[in-house]
Image 1 (cartoon, helix red, strand yellow):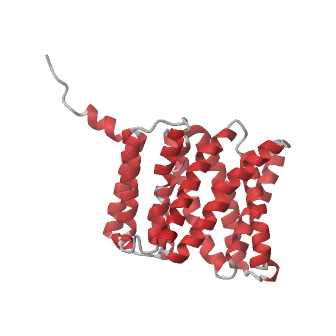
Image 2: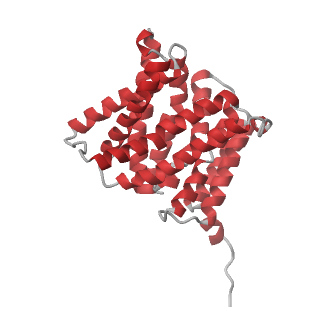
Image 3: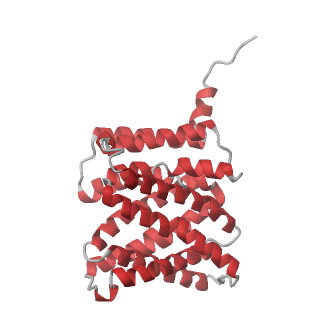
Length: 300
């Protein structure tokens, strides 16, 4: 990837890492599906406004909208539901490690669909990155691996869903990024609407100013702006590369916790970050070629 694409990936990691902070604030006063509905609904309204202001038009073809439904299900509704259910049964640290396998599944799916080549340095880099996430979060998170198999399967299922979303989403790369983002978020909000109405009764909620601010940050920054960057990277860098963000999100969450909340960063976390960045270099193809270039060439 180019330096600009790596920069966008870093911004995306910050935006999606920040979603955990916004969600934590919002969930203190609101029910989960109300937060999901507000997240997608407000983001969809914002993106539809952007589509109008930029002079673009939403497609009218039922086939394209059916594609938006599939993308909304694969990228939002299914993984969010699986993660929410899975985290009831397993610790968040283990969930983060399992979620970090997303680039590996994406590489496999993209290779099977003929979109990207599955190279040895890419597989090695992803495995190194997943190891780094495990070290960063702490080996203790793996202590209960296998204790709640269905919860673990749910998180892995979310990673697989993200993988299919990344490869499926490339079919919209000919469109301006705002259009598939608006379509995907609109269909995601419509999926969440009946569940929120039946289970949460959102009309009874009385959120305070901090909660409303968190919802705006979650919907406008982490979701609307985040998915704009996601689609730009998806069209230019490929599905596997954009899914590397799942390796960076634990890093940004840790750094944000240290900078904003004053949380202590352990030495093992620093080692984990080093492994993650080595994995990213290997995936990018800059680490291994450099090592090969340093080998002495045969003479004569």
